[in-house]
Each structure stands twice: as C-alpha cells, then as structure tokens.
Amino acid sequence: RQFYKKLILKVTPKMQYPGGEEAIEPLYFQGEKVKGTNYPVVEYKGNTLGTYNLSFPYRDGMQKGVLIADIEAIMGNKTVAFTPAILNTNGVKEWKTYMYSLPNNPDAIPLFTETFVKDVPATGVGIISGYVLFPLSKSVITDAQKKSSVMAQAAQEMKKILADKNAKITNMLMYVSSSPEGPERLNKNLTTNRFNTAKAYFMKDLGLANTPMAKDTKFIVSNTVSENWEGLYMLLNDSNLKNKAQIVKGLQNAPNLQKREAVLESYIKTVPELKDVILPTLRRADFYIFYTMPEVMQVEDQVTTYYVPQLQETSVLSARTDVNLLNDLAVIAIRNKDYRKAKKLLESAAVINQKPEVLNNLGIVYQNEGNNTQAKDMYTKASIKNEAKYNLGMLLLKDKEYNKAIPYLKAMPNVNLAYAQLMANDNRAALETLKKLNLTEGYEYYMMAVAAARVKDVQVMAVALQKAIQLDPELKERASTDKEFYPYAQESIYLDIVD
Image 1: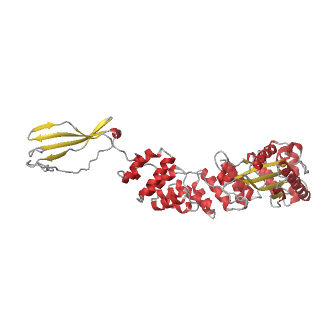
Image 2: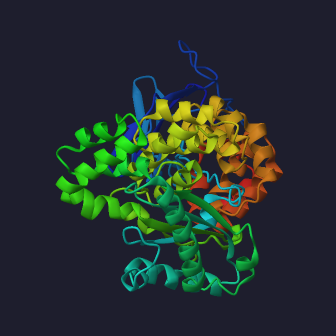
Image 3: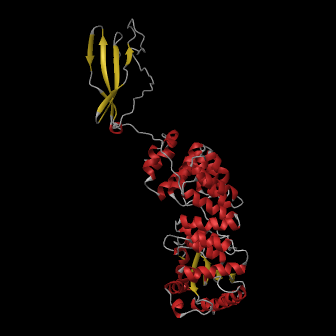
C-alpha cells in the first residue's frame, strides 16, 4: 500500500452515544511532498507508526458509545470523504471514586461497675429484677405482693435462665428500704427483719433455694437503708404535689432527727398522697439478679434478658446510695435506648462517685443527645478504661478526624481502626491491622484489597478481592470500576476476578 506524496489526511475521532455525539480536534497527516504544512509525515511506502493520547469530556451514556473516526483526503482544493472507521464498540469504562462509609457503626460501649460483670461486654450481661412492698411497720409479705405481675414475670424469666445451660448466674443484689416514719431504732430492726423475710421469699420463689448459689455466702450483695430520707426527697421532687418544694425544704431544714420526724408526721396528716402513695413506695425489698452469656452466643436470635420493672416506674430507684446499682441500671436503660432515664440515673451516681464507668456512660448519653463536646469530655475523663478510649475514637471517627481517632481506636482494635487508617492514608498500617483481625464480612476483605492495592501488594489484593466478592457478590460490579484498582486495569490477576 502507498500513501500519496501530495495528500493530506484529516482524521476526526468521535464518540457517538445514546443522546449525543462528542468530537475532538482532528488529527492531520501529510505525504512526503506536501508543502506549507508541518503535519506528521507518512512515508510513501512502508509503515509509519504513531501513538496518540486522546480524551473526551465524559458524558452520561458513553458507557454504551461507539468510537469512530471521520476520514477525509485533501489535495489542493479538493476533499473526498471516506466511510467512517469504527475504532471501538465497547463504549467507555467509567472509573469511579466511591464514597466510603463507616464499615461498622456500633453503638458506643457502656460499662457495668459491679465487679462480677465488669469484664464481660454489656451485650453478654442480663438482669432480672423484681420487688415487693411491705405494710407499714411490718416485715410480712402479703399474698397480693407474692402474686403481683412483677413477681410472676420475674419468676417466669428466671425459669428460662435456670434452664439455659449457657447462662451463668453471678450474683444477686438485694436492696431493702424502710420509710422514715417512727423511731429510728425500730426502723433499723424492721429493715433487718424485712431483709431476712425478703431473702427467704426471693430465693424460694425464684427457684434458687436448692441451688449451689444458695450456699455461697457471697452470692447475695445486700444494701439496706433503715430510714430512707434521700429516697423520700427524690420521690417528693418527682411527684406532682404543688407544695413539694416546701415539704422537702421543711424536712431538710429540721435541726435534728426528732424535729424532722415531727415535721413528717404533720405532713402525713394533711397530704394524702404522701401517706398513701409516696411513703408506701419506700417500704420495699428489691432484687437484681445478674447473669452472663458467652460472647459467642450473642447473635440476633439469642440475646440476654433485661427484665427490670423498676425502670418503668416514675422514680427508677428510691435511694441514691449505691453508685454501682445506679450505673448498672443506667446501662440497661442505654441498651433499651432510654437515654433520658439513663441520664437521671447516671447524674445521681456521679454525685456519689465519679467512677470512670459512670463518666463513660454519661458520655454515651451526651453523644445521643448530640452534645459531642460534653461526650468527648466524659470519655476523656474515663479514658483509664479501654472502652471509653474506643468510644472517644469512634466519636472522632464519625467527625472525620481520622488521625486523632487512630490512637484511641487502638485500645480495642477492630475493623474501625483499619477504616480510620485507610481514610488517613496510612495504608500500610491499615493493611497490617486487617491482617491481624478475624475478618468475616465482604466489605472487610474489600477494605483489605484497597489497602493492598495502594501499597502495590498485588497478591494480597487479589486474594482479598476474591474473598470479598465470594462473601458479597455485589462487590464485583463495584470492584470493576473502582478507581482504587485502576493501576491494575490491564493486569490479568485483576481482570480474571472482575470480568
């Protein structure tokens, strides 16, 4: 074949696609004897090779486009158009930059304070509780209290736990309270008698009487309040009494116990709700049975039971003396997404003792209120606990402060740490983190493939990408156009996976 020596060839590349056509500047070539122009010369005989990088502005629809070239021969004033040449019918491959989202966005981790459950994740701890109310000045449990819906439900839940070989009952906390009417000496004896009566009844009714736990002297943790003035103040403040502030002030300002009891007696005679509703609530015995489940059992169809009727009452606890119980009930409220009740419990606990567990859980409450500044402050103050560090790291991660989040997430390494490292472009560290984890999800292996691609570890990239697609076939389409893998677009090790 020959290229005429005085000929100019005009080639105009075009992309035709559904909805339109896009052309770029034409290319010109000339024969050996063309004068007045300076186009690339094509030899009269033989082959002339040239390489050109062409680009079109991308338009939607080009994925199904056809690349053609209009060809015109020009000699002097004459122009002859040839049939357009079809260069490519495969369309345009669109490489995309995907927006990464947080791969695993769990709730912040709450912390129990009771020593027998503090090393167990909150998801692995269950609580069953109940209570009975006592008549005035008596330590007997009436039939009505024994047959209450609260005790019936508690007994039913306990049967399930005792029958579950995977459940381990750890301890029972008993809280016994007496209202402040009458002489203090009598109330002390009354509270002791109420504790003994309630202990015997709870152990029998809940099916614990003949178990090894009944013989363990450390099984029951007792907390007794002989004259529950603090509980009375709390119940009054929570009540709808119009003169509640006046009553509380009068009781608290009494110069001595004898005068305070006299003030109380005067209000009992004139305020029916105080006598019939508030004070009877203080004559009580509550139990809280904690049990644990192995972490491997925490799956969607098997979760721990939280039966805590006290959380459904207006006043969730009639005393503020036990910081551990206040905190641990708050954990249950957090698990039930009842952050308002959790906040009330935790604020009461913090007045007694600002334990790191309490501060961590307050951080969770503030975070769910949208008050991230206070949440960060609480997590920082509680950072002696790894869970608090992790919660702070997750909060920073959600705020896209990846470099700041990394040191805190290292306290409890998981895929979120790798995500933060990847987003901070610390790709080598992200890859090493992922290698150490027990990956189970497709997106986790996909992250590993991305990290490996960035550090040019092709073998690890290929293995991870294959595993990701195996676990989640929908990732194949994403991987075929993900810009992260563009450097490997012509390599068979990549093409064999995504084609």
